[in-house]
Length: 201
Length: 293
Figure 1: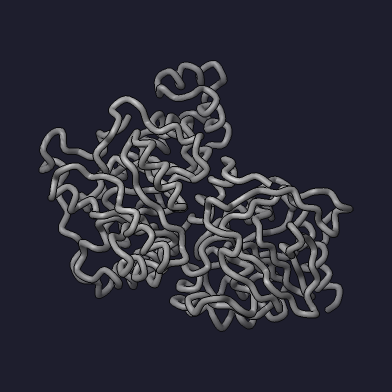
Figure 2: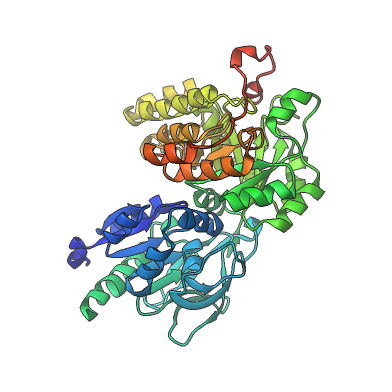
């Protein structure tokens, strides 16, 4: 299914968070995965996943290790996926100064918009691209998407709210596809964004 | 839609990986920890080094202090309850803390029973000295395990002992045949199903963090290299001479634990670490790690 991608490498930003889970998912899908902690490592990959974790902690580490500029540049055009905290970092607006938003996808959101851990939940949600097959999604102190721009396509909703979205090169989820065994979302990222971008080029 | 399930509890522990969880005693320290890049704060009235020095009964923190901290930071807020004190845990759940630490740092409330953590919707972390203790706590519903180490000592030796013991016993499990696993589960006094699951995974079924005596960036690297997935730093930050700089250095060291040149750079210029104590100087019966089983 993804044989063409065998020469592509997808990086996983590994400053903090559940980056190992994404790396395992890439391995399962059959794509080369690589942990990214430095600019040199970033420049060696074809696409990037920003994992779940704490967006404030990741922001500090991005600043400390001078990754703000190379990341901002990378996420503008390269294939990128962000889950939970990763989505926050890719959005164009956040509710706080302590978190950086790269503005790679035109969405506004509220951090922890679904509440504290006591409100964290799982839900089976249908995805636009799996013929309505439900995806078991874990929402952990999840960010809530408040608005999306015209160039943003919603790919899944929960209680009428968008929880997964994309534009031409960026895919984001409020929940954590890396915490379940279902690879549908990672496969979608590889086939519909990483490889399709290649086709466009 | 389901809240409070085991996978949702473990999910939060997964998010904390590769980070530092810092002990704080007020809102100001909590803000400093968040600004330094902590992934969570542990709200407690006295840090372990002071509990050790002051003596007396150490209990759950005042709800007012916990609320003040929840207001000021956006990262998860954890709090400790006494071993076996499920009423304290119920109060912490009502306060909507993000994680409860059933902790040997506080004075135990029950010498026989730990809390039945499966009954709660909030996740729990528990300390352990070996694999058997870790699996007993997971059997009771803990969503995260940490080494006990020796809290408030500033001495890494006990955390190393506990992490090596856990990892060593897991390695041994992976090469055992099915019939040996039952005997091993008897030896460990651990639930058979969890022993089997751990043998298959080659790691604990929940995230495995380190705590107890971590005081320097080098300590952080040591524990990560021994297999810890995240670090708790208690007295190590606020008992040092420059808490903000040390907090930041610990965070950077935990990300780049495998790069000695970066560890050297972040350690440079730090003022004195906490003084610490040799374990042999701790009077018999006063080791915190011996609380719980």
